[in-house]
Length: 266
Length: 156
Image (cartoon, rainbow over the protein chains, first blue to last red):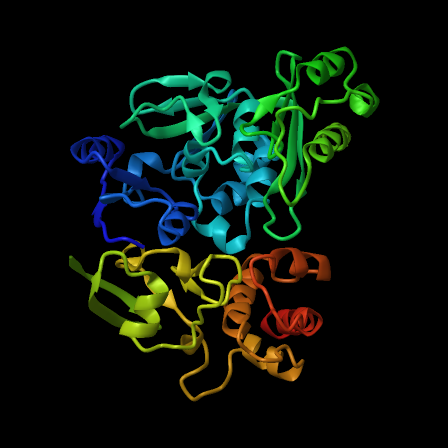
């Protein structure tokens, strides 16, 4: 790891001003991707601004409309929150399935979403549940947030403060894990939202999380596993690597979507 | 640039002047000479470096020493009783032959204690799922699972 200056931020605004002061500064949330990337010298920030002490980035609030997770909510915290389990069970379950128990004790929701790893779990929840990403400058709808591989709508210096997830009628997330890394080879979140509309968000399969319009339409007509069982997703543009070819990932999307509908109905 | 880092390790204050990029595991092993915490993969996969930070299991190779500033750390050296009596989890690993080469064992034990803090009476499937972040290259998982099941009885 290259040398850097370590700083601590006392609030989101403090972090933003520290970030603005140094062109090559980076934020440190839980560090479960950041520290590993720095050790591999894939990242070499001049300054690392630790957000752990920013009180306004912490905290989980649940009301009748939904769940708002502070950006620094640890995965283990979300998974264990009785309020989240009750309001949006899929969110607690998804957080409880990220990485392993030690990673979940450190890793944060905001870090995961800002990093936008193509195989991360949280982007599927943000897009699938039609969440809103709140930042130090504005609020961004999920559909406008994830732009490409590791690319989001966040502007330089803009920091995620929290994400608001509206309560869904029913939802489930199914992932096919890479047996070695445990990352999602394909993860599908299916949600029937409060207004009856359906969202199908796919992570791990392509360069960035995406929705499957054909499945959403079919599930709005009939929310049953059979409705998606014969819908194929084109393999073109999906990831191919030593773990799985694009056509295999395409096949898995249908299988995982079907299982997610089954689980949502259970 | 160096910075002063201070925390409580196994109940005692510990401090050192370290480079800002120093990992927690490096601080524990090299500054404090507590070498029971192992570096296995060094990529946050194997879990041999697991310690407790404020009571929660974390991978000390994947965090900076500065991230533990002011916190309370417990390492494998800090769990036995003052008279040398093994922690019930250590005893269970001993009784059930829960180790072969022993390299992964400190991480397994620290992770397993954290697991039982959250699942006091786990079934086998839960133990195997929750042990996701600890790898044993001897593949001695059966006896590790047995050890944790036995410890759940004595610790419960």
